[in-house]
Length: 158
Image 1 (cartoon, one colour):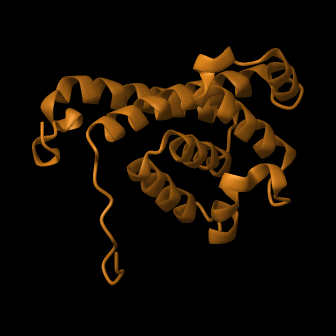
Image 2 (tube, rainbow, N blue to C red):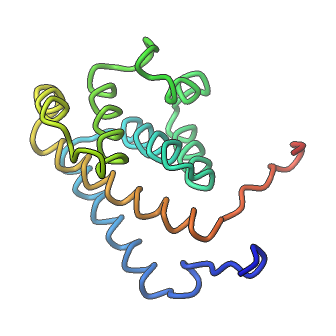
Image 3 (cartoon, rainbow, N blue to C red):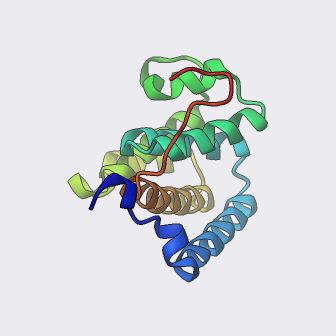
């Protein structure tokens, strides 16, 4: 199948995509109830998308992070969060859990990550964050499989 003929999953099976979108909205409610702020949510979704190689979702969540007031400097530091001083202890724990979820096939969520993150986030926050990560990993796979394009923005050169 050529790239031009690549199936766009969200258009080709609308009912399945609507179900995933509804799931994502439920996850947002769980995150709201747990008190997870928008900055933390967007940072982990950017990082998961970076690690998965999903340029489409990176763009979506960078735009959402900027709309929530996250600065370009902080967004640029996500990829190197371990060496950066711009993240709170909670954000660092969330970013570490993000990596465990993206690479879950390697060792699940390792006990040391679970214990460290669990010592910083409440159980309710841990659960909400884990569901956010399940959702973004699903969206990443849809966009990557369909090779969703990320064209230059108006006025930008490729």
